[in-house]
Image (cartoon, rainbow, N blue to C red):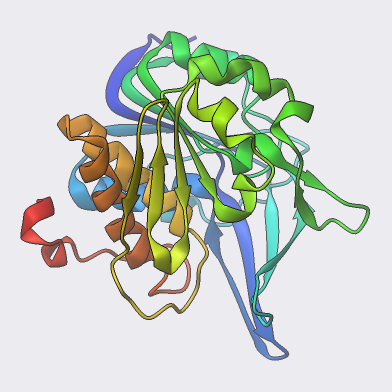
Length: 278
């Protein structure tokens, strides 16, 4: 095992193959996955970070990532098919990569992000992360997602997963409105800070004592893929700066908004970051 090193932010989650379809003849194949989107924010903002990800032998984008994934022989890379032709995005999974194991966590970090997209961050890996980071943030999608018989992505109740007992290892849990519907909000906020993203309506920050409503930054949406990932990266940036939860949420909303203005992993122009958030 190589000697362990340290960084400000440790991203634990996979790169993916995304297939984005708006209808017949309008399909885009692109790099996806939380690790890719979060890294785009950290690289634009000069955040010292590392990525722990795994992929299959078919990984198609090794030249597109600064931190390559661990390639697991005999496996495939997680593949998402997103149907954007309906009012609400419909996700299916065409392939799933191997999970990230506790032994893969060899970095210490100020903040670690458990940003799984399809169950690749195991409960024991999350515990390992909490042992090597001062703060741990998690995306609810990595804890809740399951598949139906047709490969469509569904959210199960947190109580029906092994992660329900691990909330004490988290400092922040981010959930979309859809994911929040299967959470006991009062139970979660009693154990950790819960941040619920609400798209154009901004986000809500819930702690044991307070509820904060933070408005969005208005933009024209092109593709919602990766908005939650960039949101989580912005929130992490605020934590690294020692900002208040309200300011962390403002940063998160801004970066999440930038993600939806482009198809695929965004190219961020941080010169447009409002002066109040720099």
